[in-house]
Image (cartoon, rainbow, N blue to C red; front, side, top):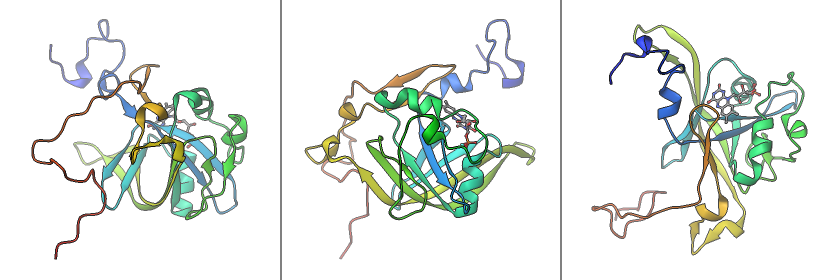
Length: 214
Ligand SMILES: Cc1cc2nc3c(=O)[nH]c(=O)nc-3n(C[C@H](O)[C@H](O)[C@H](O)COP(=O)(O)O)c2cc1C
């Protein structure tokens, strides 16, 4: 079957299929603060890493939401890993609370001050990345018209990871049990992995700073 997005058969597919196909999407659980010191936390599944060195990641705000406004104001944000154990907390933190009301408190989470940025991190999360904003990009459509979507890109300036999730020098995905968003109200959790070596990469490092050439 083929269709252009605007002409979907709504009897067969009541919902747009895009979010059901872009799966699984890692969750950008984004914490921010503003100049007044108010703190904010919300999940963003239009989120990913985009460049390996320097480490650059980004989240996409469908309208001007608080995370975008706070990141714009301070030039900083922190990504926190959402895990199976934290799934309910993550979900609660998506509620649109009045500006100034902390989603941390609402979701029963503890904010810890950042080390390299002012944005707090989620103490209960096993891994957090402190980021400084590098670009804020308004998404445009095919006609060049602005959409209501804005992507906030940031470079990692600080890494927190609970050492119990490091096994033989690797981040242990099975122990971490990160959750990811699928379509509709569906999620998935990493409880199985497989490995496959890239044909041209045998023995090379898994990302990170490029090796110095003499
Ligand atoms: C798992 C999950 C993923 C979400 N992903 C996005 C997203 O990618 N973009 C977006 O604008 N809102 C997304 N939302 C909704 C926001 O979390 C929600 O609007 C929240 O209130 C925004 O908070 P803020 O205004 O404090 O930034 C998501 C919600 C959930 C539960």
